[in-house]
Image (cartoon, rainbow over all chains, first blue to last red; front, side):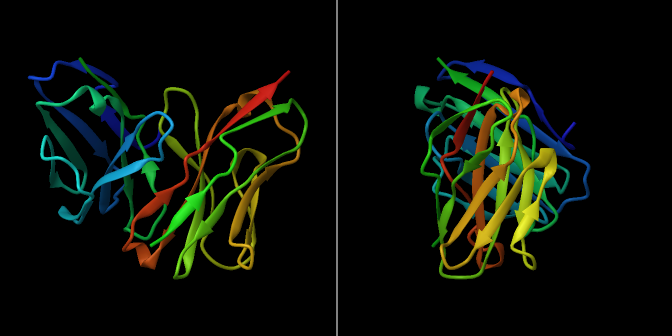
Length: 112
Length: 114
């Protein structure tokens, strides 16, 4: 148990589908993150929220849309994805943006 | 800007042998340094961190790392590895008070051979 819970663990979707990834933490952390992990590439930071405000959007395509309704929950809404978007999507949280990250187990996304 | 280089993409080691995983970083500001481990089908777990103070830091599972500012390195070591240490290991740097976010290396796959 990492303290950061991601659902679903696995997701297969077509390019025309709309789906959402969910992340939840009850560690009392104020910052939450979405990372993309693709094979043979470094982890890519996608979005950062600090106290529910988005502070980082790392040139992510608009087909990925984050939502942070409160400090404990983070969503990643997906629509019209491409096969190259298939990857492991990791959520993380931290006390502040200068603190170590705690990761969830990720959602393995496959786009067909 | 900051960057992390993990020169070895894969390191095979026999069980009970020592291991060193190399990490070099570059940053124009003071940094915090981390090692994370990722077991199959799981997220990343913090192994150890260097924030300040002693340059030799000890982490979980018997791992330790030494911060060397002059060589801009933060190599990870374990004196005797176990089969269960087979995993992907990531070095990461956090600089600028967190303004630049956490930057990860590409990872090193540690393979323990019986």
